[in-house]
Image (tube, rainbow, N blue to C red; front, top):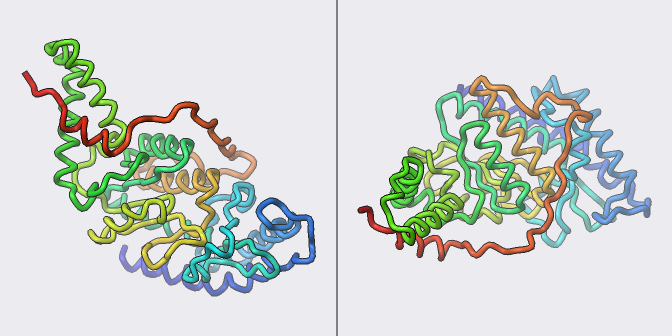
Length: 338
């Protein structure tokens, strides 16, 4: 299996160089067209990117051993190719950015998005087939947070979709004590033992469970460290990335043009500021887990016409008062058992 992964990696390295001529020239090919979108791309230019990417894989996909897991049309519709403004660019991301002369917009090389997504999904399947545990980390956007929770429930995986608590990985023994406490409180509630407490203590235990559920609900059944961490944004989730690296746990990250690829073992260059793009990639990675477990996929294998992208969530009118400080306070205030 190790040889297979190395072979797969070499295939994608060849795609790295092959994609340069197949995509970069397209990005700058319409610089005289002034019909611009709000992202700084001409409509014709976006159409050319889709056409060139499709033609590239029609011609070279089988030869390079790269599968187009998400239809090119769907990735285009989600805005996966849209990078950040040039001033936010990390020079180390240059190999993943297509040339875009005459524009301040950065264009992510969609050929490489597809190639490295295929590679990442292969890595996920290999780890899961060997019994490895996968931890998803995504703490931005309600749609994505809920999607991560749902996909992890479907694939029996683990997740953190609220603020990352420092030491979740590097201080796992301490965190696991809080998880055990959470499970004990749930047992009290589920068995009816909570009725032995007075009303005030029952209310306090209920509040405690809500707070534990928010911060630890996704790792409540995690027994030991994960073998793989998947993050939706390596800059926002930099603490999770740092802890994983410290413990030599491989990281898969959806990286925009401002990321540092040196910190990521398995990069998926794509627009992680697009909720729809992140939704698609998380779905593909979750499907890889499902397939490795012999379960059906929900996205992979579908045609573009059969994929319905999510709509942005409506803004919440009220802000939650929960944060890492109140979590710690309530963690200390649990009533002692009678």
